[in-house]
Image (cartoon, rainbow, N blue to C red):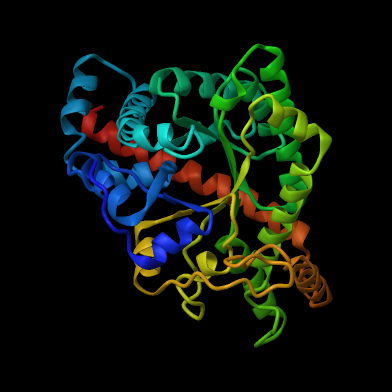
Length: 378
């Protein structure tokens, strides 16, 4: 892997302490060398996947035909065939990113794969699937994505206790984020008791951004036109989540784990492509710059940021040179108060988004199953 110069805005984002992860993966990207080039050119240091990404990858490429034909010849069922296909891509991506993993002491260089979303309300099935995926990928820089449902919380703790690295996905509410952090801490405490090397266990908490604004703005528009609260919910939500993250890092509970070699569970900003053309296409990157975070972006958002993204100097009181999160907490609370005054129930918003998020991934999973089943000739 040769060192090259990253576009200045992406380099600045990385230098500001934000790890840039690519929210996409396909066999085409792997076999063409595009992923390796992204690492060199675009400062990419991690990859996230989800059922929608895999459904699009398999449906849009003939790169999977040979493996699917072999699976069909062996009489492998469609559910197991999908596991074989997706874990093969993630395993190969882990190998491509292994140098990053080693260079960052296991902090970055991670590739995430999600448990079957149909298990989102089943703790035992989620645990079993997480164990199976971890075994199938068989790479130390893999991460297993577990949804932040009530049923997913004990699965997060259990997986971490086994030494499995976890990407907690589909986090929408501050209350649930606090539960996720508690599940993470409990998992690491149990992992320590089980004799695992905490420095090898990674975790991120994927806080979804743009979907929050899309839902809240729709409700504001229904209440009345041109509300000044439009476009404020998602950033306020994320910034208050980071405030809690800072509080946890200052706690005695975390200090004990850090002294045992643990890495923090970094907030990861997910769903960072804007859903409203009225907003700048790099909004959820520009406004969530702070050290110790991850921003996972689809290719279009990475390209947009490389072209015209800005890593602004800290504007909030107490923020660092590059920071647009720390020091913004009072404003975030004021934004939430304004939303409540406008009649927006954030608890209802985030509950609805969780239900819809699970269903969207289930639908994409069903699309993936149907595509593989058709190509297998079942």
